[in-house]
Image (cartoon, rainbow, N blue to C red; front, top):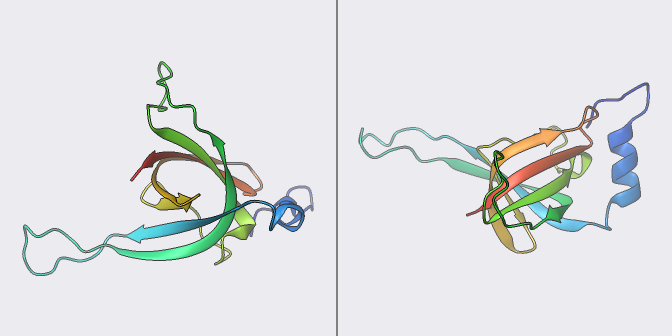
Length: 124
């Protein structure tokens, strides 16, 4: 659920008017795991998938001077209220899958109403 602005549930309105018209996506929350006993063995992260909806904003695959955009990056927009658990927020530790391709989230932004999340993504 987003943040109501001026008494209006903007994120709910966006979901109500766009739901079912966007691309199906999956936000995969990645949580660092614990050590398995071997100090050099690393950790075993756990993942939880959350169904959501969104779209690919751009597939401009060229380096833009002074920005985080590099060859292979795409911008994915997720609609906040479509993320199935209701209060799940994407982070740079997570992955997103859309149009059958999986991407690591390397940067993100959101609007003040938490209605949309703009994800700068790199192929897995």
